Length: 145
Image (cartoon, rainbow, N blue to C red; front, side, top):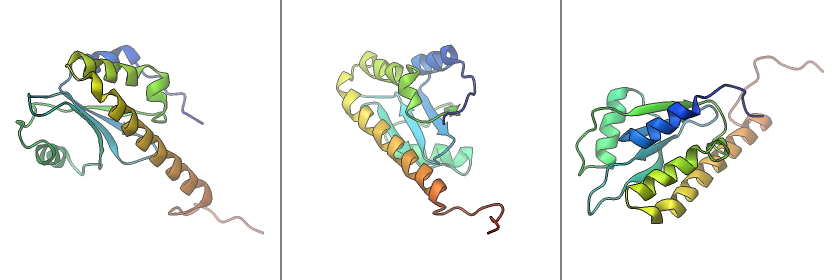
């Protein structure tokens, strides 16, 4: 079941419309969704999953390695998304990401963006199943027979 945390969608929409680099953090999976809107004639914007960083400095270094032809951005906007990744679509957030890609001149990236979201949702599904079956998890208490 998804959480009932309130999200200021208008603020999220504004970030998507204006920010240069955005990461989404999720509750159930450690990978982050990275949306880097920077582009050149030879480099398109990027929407992908990336591993969780151990520090802000690590995130900036990793981004520089991922996008070596770009300068390190002044800031990376992080959005904590306390719901399932699929709710990005239900809330209209993912549509705003796709709209931004189109506005930047890359409407053809909508299909690959859908694939990234499907992959993230699949990872979430696997992690949920692991939690239910106990794979990689341990109980805080033991059930007495």
